[in-house]
Amino acid sequence: MKILVTGGTGYIGSHTVVELQQSGHEVVIVDNLSNSYASVVDQIEKITGIRPAFESFDLADPKKTLDFFDRHRDLGGVIHFAAYKAVGESMTEPLKYYHNNLSSLINILKGMQKAGVTNLVFSSSCTVYGQPDVLPVTESAPIKEAWSPYGHTKQISEKIIENTSRVNEINGILLRYFNPIGAHESALIGELPIGIPNNLVPFITQTAIGLRDKLRVFGDDYDTPDGTAIRDYIHVVDLAKAHVVAIDRMLKGKNKKQVEIFNLGTGKGFSVLDVIHSFEKVSAQKLNYEIVARRPGDVEKVWADTRFANEVLGWNAGKSLDDMMLSAWNWELALKKAKA
Ligand code: NAD
Ligand code: WQD
Image 1 (cartoon, protein in one colour):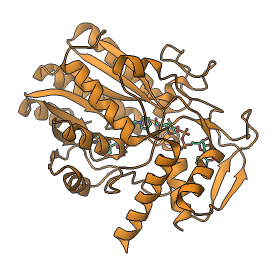
Image 2: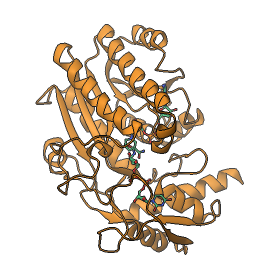
Image 3: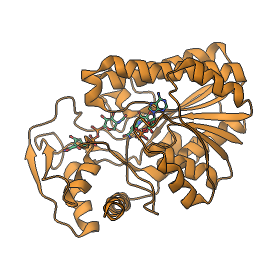
């Protein structure tokens, strides 16, 4: 089936396009390249031998988005990644986030309705849970007040899809990602943070390669075994594969409800120091780091209850933390080689 992948030149989108193509789907990417590069299309072609169709425009533009759906009436479904995702920036520029993330979704839903496309996979986030009261966190845990406008856009987007599906023929699968890290084993695609990375793993690899002076570990006074914060890190390729399962589930009419929600994580929590030690082991590099104060807004610990996704989707995240860190390091090395 032909699948629209919005944000398909981005980090998670590009890995998903590879998995979709390798599963026999035809892909059309829409991305305005606000946080990615057109050359990613070449890299996808190198991995899969198939060049995905690619159109560059802003999905927050209603006219262009509706025109796209007019021209693509043969879509089997949409996987919607396109959004802004920098939590810190969303605090200082909230309207930029509300406008981009919500307008794009609304335009896509209108386009789907017009073109009779019924299946939507949406990128949600564990950020909707805030600091859960019970760990591991299940899909039925309460949605806490969002700390950032970015997180709020994910909560609102989930509601927009749920409410739309009540009146329109839309099936939705909302995937709540935990912390995606790592890169494709080919080291041809991976995360390309623009400027100074906010996230832990690109900061580690950029420090080890000499682009950053040192990593600051935000807090060692949390109520965790080593005092540093715990997250559920998931390999981006495992995450990408779950999208193929999700879209196939709706294409085959196997979904049990019009909107289904799944946690995508490994179900295991690792501390910041665990991640650093895994990196040092697989890369044989000593990382320069120091402990500093907690980062405002960070939750202490969160990891997923993945049983629902494992049982219902028949999907499992198979890759270990060492696999994730090695692939992230190989990607950083490949970027350095490409620049040389
Ligand atoms: P990314 O920035 O690498 O990819 C998003 C892509 O969307 C980019 O290529 C960008 O150019 C494009 N885009 C943004 N706004 C657009 C618009 N209006 N029109 C067309 N294209 C647009 O981000 P990612 O890490 O791949 O994240 C993908 C999705 O997953 C996002 O919705 C993000 O919020 C969500 N998510 C990411 C994480 C994470 O840690 N990476 C965790 C949870 C959820
Ligand atoms: C992980 C851990 C930091 C950087 C973010 C978003 C979330 C979701 C995933 C989209 C934390 C620590 C980090 C550094 C550090 N994205 N850290 N030094 O904050 O769990 O989640 O990405 O939906 O919404 O908030 O990920 O990689 O920034 O941090 O010590 O330089 O690493 O304090 O404990 P986070 P992260």
